[in-house]
Image (tube, rainbow, N blue to C red; front, side, top):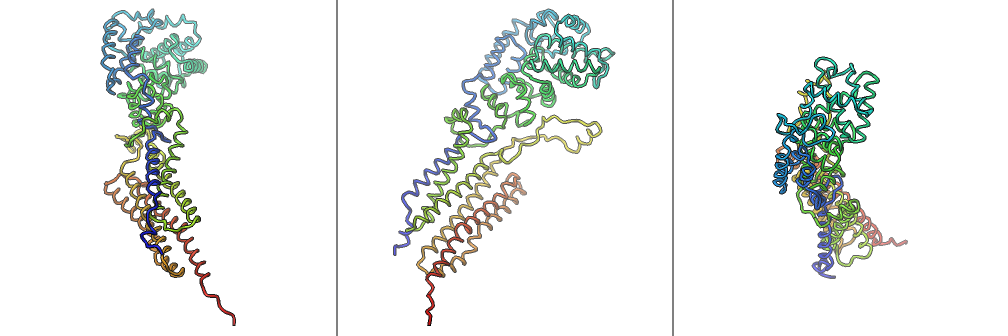
Length: 557
């Protein structure tokens, strides 16, 4: 009989399998691809070689669009773009050469005959466009100019001035109707100058014709209200550049809502719309994710135009979890996102399989095992690898199980009778955090998983120790029954881990998260199920059969 130390000598393949499995698992973890989020490394790669915010602002200056360039410069300065000072010098130079155009944000060939944009105005800085249409003489001049338009859409918009049934506006033809009159003329000027996107143009014309037909503003009044919100914050060129990239009335309403609830973020929101050439995607993203989405959008703006396009195209939050990322693989992830995601998860399974296989050879495999035991070893390592890979995916995908918090920017219907009560009963959250999994939660899950893996290895080692003893099968069976408490210890450790996690959460040591607490119980159940069903039951059955075969056969008299 071989000595015990030789029976349990480490096979030479064990260290190689452990090392190879650990390397493959770590490389898979470092791939910058996620299921429901996008990593900063991927944003950085997508933005490489594309226009930065300041470079885009310089293009606007070269196009003599002062107003949009001013908002873009504010963003470039806020994100620390190194080309922001050069953009500022270019803006100052253009403003000094065309001082009268600063109030309008730029020159417009269709608007110049009406307002003579180059004439000196009392406004020395970017001025909201509604300011220029409030005076009576300005509205009379705009009405006379538009009345000669050959556009059916412009004429339909002008006829809404005679609609008497309004909701929140005073009718334009009555005393106090100057705001509605100014908005009707502003819409006509935008339509006449083809500053609306084709789809938005068709929708506005349809709403205007319906309002005239029913003698009621209806849905068109909502568009006028949204235009008022934007017209009080943007100059002429800023407004036209935004509406060219807006596909429908709903997006206009979303931008007006964002301008009201997040005025400090208006430059960033506006810049993202121009940089991505799609106001609709920006509004949808921010309405969905709120302040956390605004922070993610600012992160993408700092990386460049390609990063903004990627973030809006994926429409997922930014994964800000700390950890290294393999930047060299980012180009492959951008080209083949689904393939690389599959490769990442396959890397988890393969790496953990090799790691567990090596540990099994090192810790629990006795000498002289047959081919059947080797097949069982492969199956055991494969099952464990799949289970642990699933847990690893959940731990490294912070947005997979945790839903995003309610957006602070979400549109809400205000009911007058309940407005005061609801505002006091459920105030909006003051501080919002991205819906990422806290580091303490990840650490807790990792500790609980490691404890159960240790318990699993201890149970297997005890089974192999009993199996290798030179004793009758029935004695081995009694020794196995004596170790029942050890085989159930995974449940005890799991319950203790859950209780400890709940206590730490109540004390504020770790972030409140039920996933961190109940993962300990889940790991314990999995550990005990694998030990007792996969190993203990089969070994006991084999011992019973061997004991029966070795029992003396009764001799017939």
